[in-house]
Length: 208
Ligand code: TYD
Image (cartoon, rainbow, N blue to C red; front, side, top):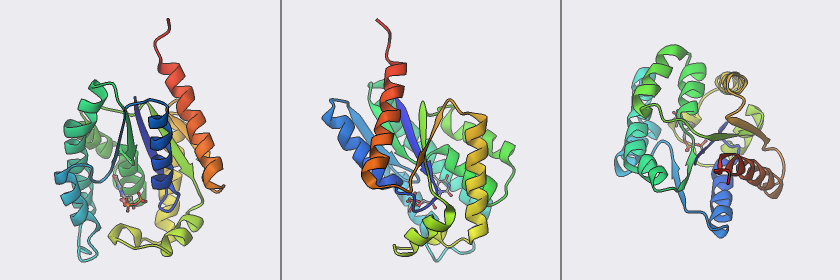
């Protein structure tokens, strides 16, 4: 089973994905955790290029291609082999981030992006995507207290477009997404994440 986490910056995705990883391991699942951009040596190299504050001249198309190059490598090197081996794969961001950030955020053509993503993923799509829902203002507030990278320094209007983009994607494919209110305590959010994952595991389990 392939589960991805999406949400605005500062929504607590990374913390929640680690909590879910621990929970699933304790329940005897074979889990593989990874992240985008990154997750392979090649992908982590691309991540450095993408996040580097010195790369202020990077064009939106260059950025889009780099995210997708890292993604293609991650899928072929890590995700497909893990899924074939029966593992639960957890990924911190995936292709939906490209549609949200490079499509809605940077206002590039969504249909073109979807074709590029399909090329990069070879058609692989998550079974379940958890959207950690937090108003962009709150996400920015949380992130400001943290370390900043090139992709963090966008204005509020950018993050509003990203959020609107996620809402559109969720409306288009409601069976894949579960929206989780990320404005609550760590434990409350974790419980809801677990419930959504258990429901999906049950739904996908072969009936006897
Ligand atoms: P990261 O520090 O991992 O942020 P976060 O904790 O919010 O996930 O940086 C990833 C950044 O890259 C984040 O701002 C979202 C952005 N991103 C895209 O713009 N497009 C993409 O396809 C992906 C995977 C990420």
